[in-house]
Image 1 (cartoon, helix red, strand yellow):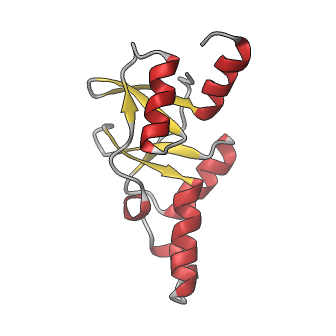
Image 2 (cartoon, rainbow, N blue to C red):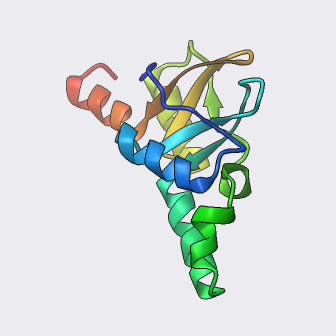
Length: 127
């Protein structure tokens, strides 16, 4: 599990989200509301899909200038409890067809477990 997360607010323009994702060297980030509560997730795939849809409509330039994170984020954010084991996380990712699960305790975002973490655990023999 990674605990040092890049987090983005739902009201931020997509332009800022693209920069954050690139600078953090991640493929997705948790999205929070003004009170810091987890409300969704934004992935590189969400951005690519939105760009493709807008390109088909002749509105690709508007994606970076007029679109907010909340307009294209995935909701709800897929979560898992901190006491879940790696197998539980792997099953949940497979069932939900997602690449990351946010680890939460109540309203507190504690971290993220990704498919890379699962692969690492298998390779290390800790599963």
